[in-house]
Amino acid sequence: MAARVDEDTKLLELLNRHPELKQRVRALADIAEDADGDLVHADEAERRVIEEVRRVGQETLHSWAEGRIARGEEEQLQADGVRRAGKKNSAGTLRSEPSR
Image 1 (cartoon, one colour):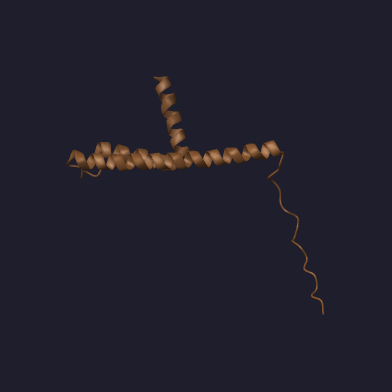
Image 2 (spheres, one colour):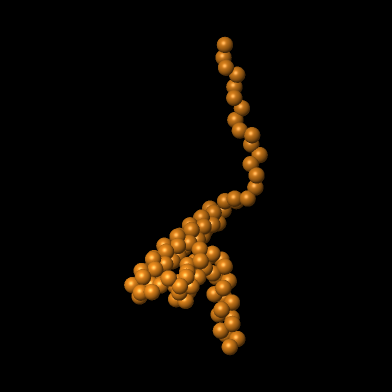
């Protein structure tokens, strides 16, 4: 029983880190429960499930890509020994006086 609680907690933490996926999972659960009470035919329920699963796939890949880009940038910065933190001290390049 404790293992199931741990799994549920981990799943909830994961979904909270990805609110767009949490919303899609909730939408799928709403379809399963017919929360709106408007699903009379299996064809309509199937259509809605397919739409939600497509959205889940798109959002999952988008989230994965953003994470991969962030990890890649961090890896590159570490490999190059570049520091990203800090404020620029330069006010820019001074303009020279126009010649007369």
